[in-house]
Image 1: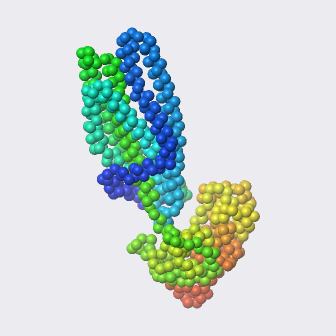
Image 2: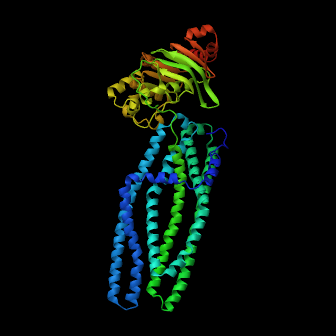
Image 3: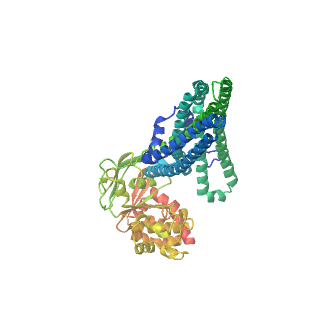
Length: 607
């Protein structure tokens, strides 16, 4: 929840929406959407063939009606009438079978297109750098992978087939109408330019309306995700009522945006029907006069009127499909924005695999900024010999986590270089680097699935014996075997069935099993009680032995056992040395110790 209840997502995209409204139809995005149907060309061609059969069957029906009236009913010829009825039934049967198979093919193809598109977006999002996710609500990311992708997939498949079907039908109807009676056909076609002018005038407004709908849905998803993730905080501070008010605003915004989009479409759809009705009246009036004069047969007039209905059907469908295209284009713009975002941290051309490392880490004049005008690290230089445990201490926001993020190459330095065993991290492949790193965070993430699966996350091929040994070393085995199903117990999403301390013990077991050469502990013991901390000290000594370790910790025991302590303040190393050396200097570390760590000793003494 934002501290200010008035803050929501309502105005954050306003400038972008206004800009989008002024942009022309994006042909590039449209053809990029269609490209996802390319692997299924054969299925779509088969669907098009079935569509042709269905359309042709629909086109010949009025012709049967004409002959039934002129040569059957008016001529009192029962035999001709029976033959025409049988032929009409046969055509209807063929059309039904073709349409049924067409629906099956379209459904199959549509789901595969959706699968490919959704998988592409998901795979790409996983490659994006941390900077992409900084400040982006998870719900909005989810909305693009679900709602927007669905809108695009429907358009690529069923929308395209529908467009082709109606276009073929329209062309066929126009040819038949011109062949049957050119004057009546021209009367019918006279209103078409008027409709296209109206469609063009409404295009930008309709596109803008559907863009607002998609963004309103994304805002709801973002807020819903925040609510689910922060439900404990919401309830602890009794913020349910204010949270409901905020959701109500977002929900009402989505409702208003959708209704506004629908109103625009409702204005256009009846307009098509009205123009069609007026045109039909004109044709009936002129055609009836021609029948009375003997220049036109009744059957031909009835058939022509039937074609008029079929003619305005595709025209009306075009307007509806066009609305669908606009909705899909709004979604495509949002999805392609993600797909066009390039990861900031990528393998350099010619990057080589990092060989098995000893673990020497060096920062050489490293500066870094998350934002260009807000530097976080300033010319940081230090060297950590292999097998050394380094503790990073300092006030919040000093740059401790940034240093370990650079070691793991979650970001690249703005200036300077980070090296391991003398190799610049930008010259080696990311996968080979991170396969030799282990990270245990303060907010330990436990995935849904069994406890065993969570421990094996960094080494999926590990045998069960190694998993249990790692759990014993992390002092997690004791609580695991007391759960309902032991190692097969479901940890649930984010480890909801486990306590904070238990989740962190599992994270230690996960790191032990992965056997990394460099270990990063980012305040990994801050939420563990004193008794639990005693249990893992021995496991930590086993885990840290022979490895290079970076430890961000607020606990005295972890700091005191470090080989070297780096005191970070305002993005600079202001002091470094052992615990005893830094205390003797009576500098910033000594003051920090007096303020924070001595309080911890007092709490332990009182306990």
